[in-house]
Length: 189
Image 1: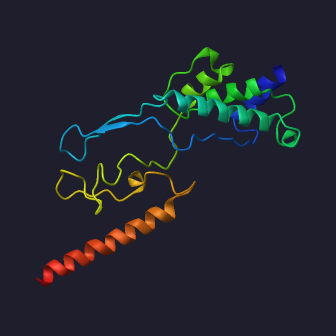
Image 2: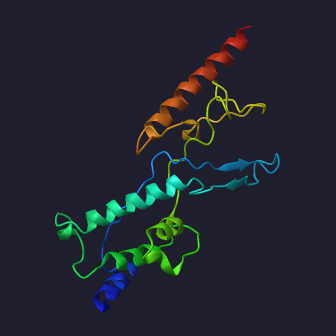
């Protein structure tokens, strides 16, 4: 165990290079809540993420983490990990990383449920919070609000993939062209 602690310290201070394996819950059932506090665009909205509000999401995270552990413990993966580093030591290392502001619990190294709760984070590609037909109309105008459009990944019901940048860029271009055509036709009248 002393060697594992030394390895954790070496990774933490940057003397050993390493990689992370992240587990992704695709299409979570839990929903968040976003509310504007006022009309000042410089003020942050109130956001409640509601991670794992739906129990099935937590079950899926635990199942995914079990799969990650099986991969880490496999013979095929053995040449990519430190021999003396246990899964529990790797879990402890992950809990020490500043990936979110959530509190850490002592049993998170032995409970996959608690590990999921303590380390949950939304990574990079927000989507589904501003759905067409519910929050924005088919022209991506915010329902009930004048002169505001949302044209980004939050309007997607499902993620178009791991890296949806191209889809977002094409949507932006399409809507930009549409807006310009509408302005041009109004100016000609």
